[in-house]
Image (cartoon, rainbow, N blue to C red; front, top):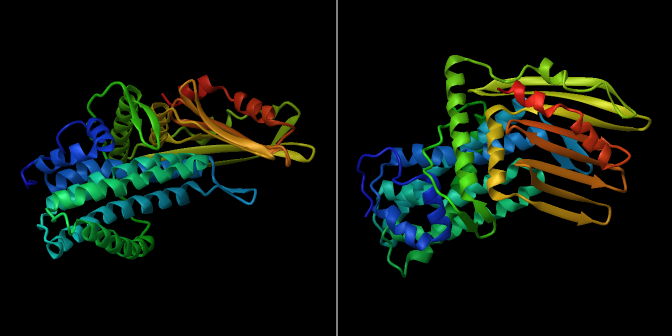
Length: 397
């Protein structure tokens, strides 16, 4: 039975527990139930780091790929994108806390036992799949993969009655009512959060992840290289520690826009560089900078951009652990995303409009991409290759 014994974090490494929870939830929930924890420990050690995945991935995706609709791509300013990410993060944290309160309040109405620690356990651990699925927001093409987050409903179905001690015959009604009440409450919280979106919660410190080896087959996701996952989590931990240190000292670590602008060549084949735009900004230790040049030849033009995503870029290393691959073929072109040499590469081309995009991560920190109209996709690849990635990686050291 869950108790309010001291403890800052759930016992066991984070990656190890995630592995057991996703692959054998029926066996893991009893362990979670018996594990001594506190509401504060669960919130700080589990909710805070995992809830940050989606907002940060969304931030990276917005700044590097933008929002595409009807053939038009919109890239928000860094300030706007950060504000959106912060709002998402605040909502996730508030939502988790409110959901725990609702679950605890409803328990006696279905023959269960009120226990705030157990309620927080239910929310934190059942939401794990949904929070992890947030990583797919980093690539717009992979956004649909977020559907794997629905696995959280299955985790909730198993864990909620067990931890709140609800009789089996009343468990289904308890789960359904809890979900419905939480949805209504979250709609209210979302509205309130939108009105105070300028508020900011400092990036969290990722909890100790433990060490797990081998390959994990996650339903709906595929094979996950646990060694690479451990490496990715370690990088994320180091990155968030640095973000917190930078926030405390006021240190701005983003590469200056002048240095990024210098990476843009004067010409690429028959295309000549024209206008150049630069942006930089940061908040709470999350700093970024961006330089973009427009290249034109006749009636064709494309944008070549170099973006420093700072610590947020480390999330992209999870793609290596998941061996991210996506492919779509249409009558007028194709889209695909894959891992090449440990770096995430995204490619899109429309043969009808002779336009597309090509982008790649560099040193788990920078994104180099080209997007627009050109004779063929090779022109956009040539544009990306014109940026000295070795020199770019050195700028981040």
